[in-house]
Amino acid sequence: MTTNVTVARQMVGAELLRLRKKRGLMVLALAAVMVPLVVWTGYEVIEHAGNPAAYAPAGGLDHYARFLSLLGVFMGPVAAVLIGAEAGAGDLAAGVFRDNVLTGRSRMALFLSRIPAALAVTFTVIAIGFAFAVAVTFAFAGGLPTPSGSLILESAAWLALANGVVCVIAIGLASLTGSRPGAITALIGWELVLSPLLVQSTSLGSARNGLLDGVLLFLKPGPVSGAPVLTMAVAVAVAVTALWAAVLPALGARRMQTRDA
Amino acid sequence: MHITHANRDHDGPAVQTEGLTKRFGERTAVDGVSLTVPRGTAYGFLGHNGAGKTTLIRMLLGLTRASAGEASVLGLPVPEQRAQALARVGAIVEEPSFYPHLTGRENLKIAAAVRGPETRARIDQVLRRVGLDQRGGDRVGTYSLGMRQRLGVARCLLSDPELLILDEPMNGLDPGGMLDVRRMIREMVEEEGRTVFVSSHLLDEVEKTCDVAAIIDGGRVIAQGSIAELVGGSAGELVVECDDAERAAGLLAADPAVHELRIEHGALRMRLLAPDTAGEINARLVGAGVVVSRLEPVRHSLEERFLEMTTRLEVAA
Image (tube, rainbow over all chains, first blue to last red):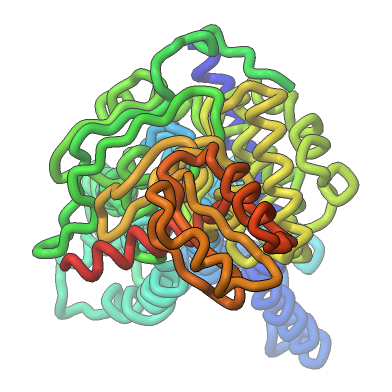
């Protein structure tokens, strides 16, 4: 039992090493999160400085809510997809999957070790973006209301949920297809284009309750930030989120078991 | 570095297959192969590209299921007890792959994490073993093919395996790289007591590296045995160079101990009924005033034997 725990810990550590040493991936993931935050903040600071009567300060609670949306359902998930896809198919792309299988270690163990490592990297990247957002919220509040400590903690938990789910979906899809570019293209297209359009399509009615973005915006703490908020029972929201988090990773794990090494 | 497994003294073969067959639809890639790989030897698995070598290795390692037949690795049936068997095996199939953005040492760290906690302590040792201790901190993307092959062997050695299965380890290597790999294989067998199963289409390398070999052609094993046995078909063949080949041929033509006498490139070539009569042949020629400048038993290379056997099969087909 102790040996199994040690092996699992080492395997997760090895995955973590593989991901964090991939410099291009890290730069891209950080840029996906930070560049929009910095550009947006800079723009709003300049606008406010130019005409304080017409433009509100770049900080405060309202901006905080928008930062959260950006980090939770737009650019944060892009970083999560990049990291998850690398974790899911990086060993296949490098040809190392076969060598790992040749050790006799179970394929399920190989698959499972990807998840905590990818989550750890994703959470680190999102945490950097969130720290920046909180700092801007307070630094440029200019007398506007600011989030409470409990809201900040709830927000951190929500960001972890929102980006964590997308990350494991990316791991699952990349493991299922065996293609990193394919998984990235499909998921970013879904996250940035299709899903926001569908969430706003009122004609879909309650069918939108099955969309991950809609559910995550429903669960988002703090004030509404402009995006439409669906109405549903919390239990439904939790069940839908769990379903999204389970189905693709399960399919990916299944494919890992049967994939020709 | 020596094998420390409790099972190292087991006497059974390192690999045994019985009627192992793999079909891909209508095509039979491996056809009823029965092999016995003795422990503590370098075993060459020889065949043209596409002869079925890699398919057989993939079956042995449980990467693909056999259509028929049985196989055991280190006494354990595969694929039934594949995980236990592979814990004692190091293998490279086709070519070793690594994460190019990581260093050699980091790649081994990842492999060690998958293998188990005890292997981590061996990383520096195996890097030294394959002569990469000075380059272990460099990114694998900067390695030559030979260095990647050696790193692949290092990764195999992490688990202190009893059996190494190396698929075409000389592929793409320059002569220096080939020599390194050959030397490493011999040391692993002679000094460390491991069994090394080497598949190759490079006949000369197998002859120089291995003790025992099997020849596979069209998915079937057409010969197996020690290298000496495999090339031993030339026993009793003699080549004689002298000042007058025509006259010498005349002197020996009627000798009942001499068969298949012919002149090739100015030298006499013959098959003797009894190989130890070469001295008598020399005495007869010298006694008759023929000046013999060279008298040598013919030794076929494995390459000649291999081509002879595979050509014979092609003709028969």
